Amino acid sequence: MAHLLSERYSGLVDAKLRNTLVTKDNYIFNTNYEGSAAAGAVKIPVRDTEVEVKAYDKIDGVSLSNGSTSYITMLMENDEAVNEMIDGYDSAALPDNVIAERLSSAGYTLGLSIDRKSIDALERTEGITVSDTKTACTSSDAYENVAKARTALSRTGVPNKDRFIIVSPEFMEKILLDDKFIKQGELSEELVRAGAVGKIAGFTVFESNNLMFEDTDFIGGKTVTTEFIAGHPNWCHRVEEWAVPVSVNRLADGVHIGANAVQGRKVYSVLVSKPETVFVKRIEA
Image 1 (cartoon, rainbow, N blue to C red):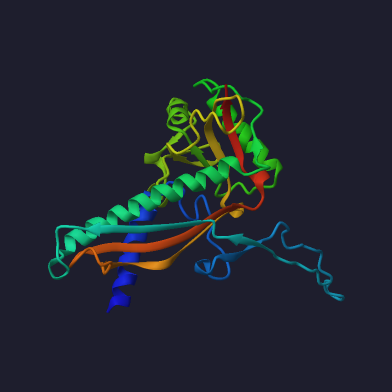
Image 2 (cartoon, rainbow, N blue to C red):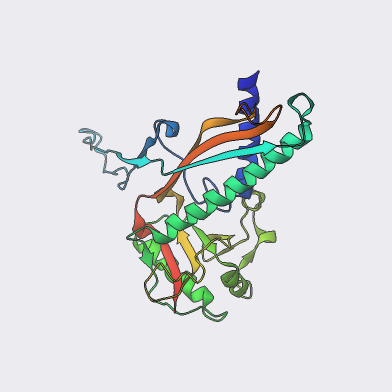
């Protein structure tokens, strides 16, 4: 019974977590991996070459070509826990609605933490493509800067389909004024459910206030703000698992008597396998 409850509680926390995330699975990050994240490391499959197409000869057929998938070992760099005492209730009288509220809160705070670290990896990974323009965009040139990101990704071989762009609230304000911006009401239901707020220049738009804002430590002597991040989930990877599933446990610490706590541990990590496929537009003051 305890095992079934842990699965149920973990599932509820995950549902709230994924609803909180701006950096959605399959839209920003892919979740393909081999191994067990709970063990501390997984293998990420990465393939830079596509299947070779050759002319077919009806008599001689066609020669075989070799294709291979390389693997990157990704260590689980983040290990975060939920451990909150539910005070005011004895174990035998713990209401379901109180448990649900604590689980919802756990999913929300975990989601915020994963979002911040995920966006941080997209912004700060060495080798990403950074725009040459370091001044703030205006309403008149915001689309032009997104178009530059589109060109840069195309030159890198990024597919047109499924490209994303994560924008700051300030940049969102500027592209909203552009006639070429496709608003949320004109998107498919699938994209709306995923949290997309629009489309522009072939990018699905997501808005986040977790982008770097007036950071004075990132580049020495400069104040740095990220206006947008553009990329594709093919080369942005995120893996997460419960190292210890969520459960409501009676505290037996020699101090609390009859008290309970919501407890669980989640491990996760984020990796950009081909940094040049991520384009970042910054303001450097």
